[in-house]
Image (cartoon, rainbow, N blue to C red; front, side, top):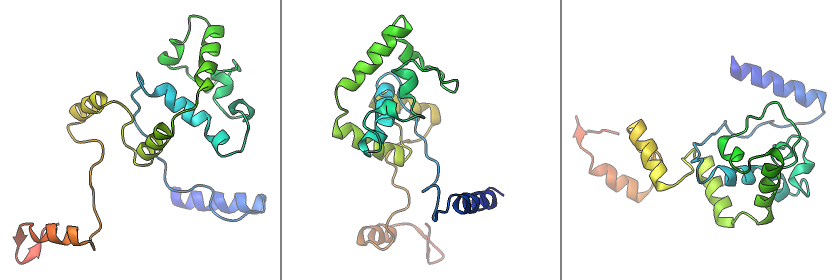
Length: 172
């Protein structure tokens, strides 16, 4: 049902706006974020995406940016302020000033690359301690798990030969 709905919606948008191609690339992805350490960095990463893409000069220039709420004080009903955002100041005006000051320095390339990598793979963005807490709660490994693999590689084939066999067949 959802696939059919999506196809029809894309067809409608493409005809209405005289465009071609897909509207969305890939599937929805989400990551758990360690709010104590990474939350405000992820906020900055998201709000600066259009600046990095040269679509706007400043994050507040984009009408749908949460920067307009977090840094400029424009009320957006869809935003629930996170407790770490609220800790930026005792008053709204002090929070706005302190939030804007986060943008005085750039996010390091390493941080941008790490957030991209972890969010694309839906891994946890946070400290090792935080990751261990989540692993403990879930009862399984959460990041950097080697699922699947290149079944044509020599490494995979050699490891597959060492797997126990049943009835002359590999147990994958």
